[in-house]
Length: 596
Image (cartoon, rainbow, N blue to C red; front, side, top):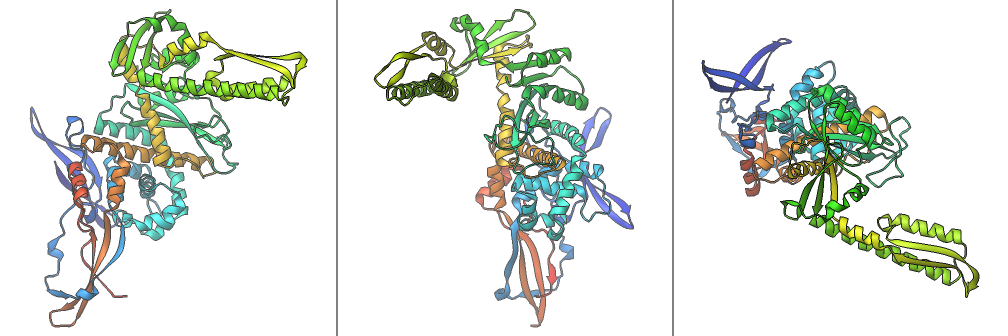
């Protein structure tokens, strides 16, 4: 591969653009094709990303983004100068490595080119495509508010050098306006990322994993009709919220998402998501992996009507219909501690997969013991209150019992409890409470602990393969965890509907950058913990080395300012080498400046 320069005259100026070109052989001879258009690159941005993504799935490296050139020695003044050692100083020390890496990921995904086309430059001081890059990079590297970007974060990074946007032009009004602009192109961005991620990583998109989460607000949200109270996954039922449905591949790479009202039930979101995926990417026989909270007979019928296939979880109560199968011994081990078996359905169009896990069994046993113990202690407390005469009314006793069983619902049926009013008080007691353990509940609990049931209309795959596809649902759960904890999706402080949707879109873009970096790290043998890598790269700084000089004749010379990047330490050099990156040494040529 090699770089090719293109020139274009615009507004009386000649602009140089770069493209990465690949030579390849065909039956008719050598040919060339453009792998990636890189746009207009500054000298400080022409760095060594040529090996980016080497070894991804055994394929050729994906399209590079930034290129580095050595300083142009022809521009260096040949006149020798003496440096005043006592006057050497370092200025403007700022974070460089993390934003440099994030900007490279942004350009690797060609989001700069896409947004430049979608939001062409107008009369604004800063192009909207650049504002979008600032928002996404900030969300990835140091996720906080737009106000924090203006007052602290941007001026503490080297993005003004990398993007050519001074800190004075990055303020909340511009960032909020950028949120409004980027939201208009949500669907185009999703379609572009689906194609670009496919080029880089070739994800297996016939298996789509869908799950729903919620994220809450701080404030009254009077101007957001989507903000409602509902089932909160964040344990904040006191706050208004919205629900987010996310579709990912089995590798966890995001394909699209939708935002719903906060009180929308999970099962009422699936049809919207399926229609959206078909509108963007066409209809095909995809396999949908769904959590049991999304499953309803109406949803399954809707998928079958669209020739869709599914693997879904089922409610725990459904296991009772398969009690005899739990007793049988024809289990197949799919991995250490996990066994599955096939169970035919009555209609012949579906099948069930029974699964049991040793670790899950130990966990459920511990939970049952805990809740049974709590119920028994609560019953003994009721008995003590009755015997002491503090509890005399049967209705009050029943309400206390109901609250006790509600708090410990997993063991609510473990006891048979009877409360009756005494004809004559026995001492201070006006009531009698008796209970006994239900042996049938204990028997079934012991039988079903660690077991769960899958339902599918994919009848041409073995139970082991179906189970492995279903457990990929954890990728969607990890996506939500990363978005909430690492990218600070929650809480949402914006109050207007459009700003909320734009905030979620920026978090989605940051998550795409996150997963791109995770895939790159995994293929480079560095694990898949992007936050650790970003924090390590953030220690690489840029700064100005200021050199006061004097001429060879003894007179005072100009002050030379060199904007340099700190030398990485041994560990950072290993990371750069494994990722195939070469850190730029200097951002600008030496510049004479006047002393302050």
